Length: 338
Image (cartoon, rainbow, N blue to C red; front, side, top):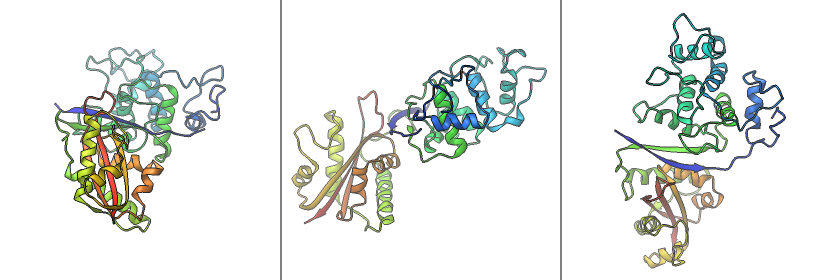
């Protein structure tokens, strides 16, 4: 059985509610306002939305269906699809319609558990099916294809940090809003996946990832009319050694535990430089996500597109013994010889 390895990247977001408990500066103001304007949510009788309240499976399914299939919601037929649904339940037509549309499956015991708080894993599948997202069905476990696609689309709100986390009403609104309005440029929580056997991730640099990173960096430089970088073996050795050193000695910093900098490491390796710089990252599974992280960091991005650097080297080392990060240490060293 394949195993899903999670790595977390959270980027800060800035947003701006139509309800008396959702201020203009609430992070999900735009999303909540959008759902209200579209007639998808109404809030409570006291004029509140209660964005921090968790949302159950029936409520979430109702909102998704009213976003995508408002004209397809029908009363239940003569036979109910789940053992714990009654014709008299307010959500019976919602659940029956969702089942007939192929959006929900329920649990192995043939129940729907309408009152259970919905988890991000469950929500991702309902969303994926409703919005007809293109997914890789070969990924395991069952929710991986949907979570991966939502991650790719920057759709997961930054407050959602665990795959099995229960959604609140504000997060629900933001998730649907991003997909319904194609707001893919917003900051997001990226739950990054690697489907693999347990020992898949190599400790040393993956050549394909190295090539990918070099391509991404040089594409970025080309967009600002800067000459491409070439790979220098010495810089690569320095980068790889430092990636492993951060894992072995359990630190994450441009300075090692002895206070040595990238310039010190490059000099000690015999590279006589005029200019030198370094980018580091931790926890990303792929070169693309590490690059995206650097792109969001002004200092790291400045190194990538700086015309004074001519050569580079990359290092990648699997993070071990860390309960939070499950990806790699990434190091890119930039240099120009004397």
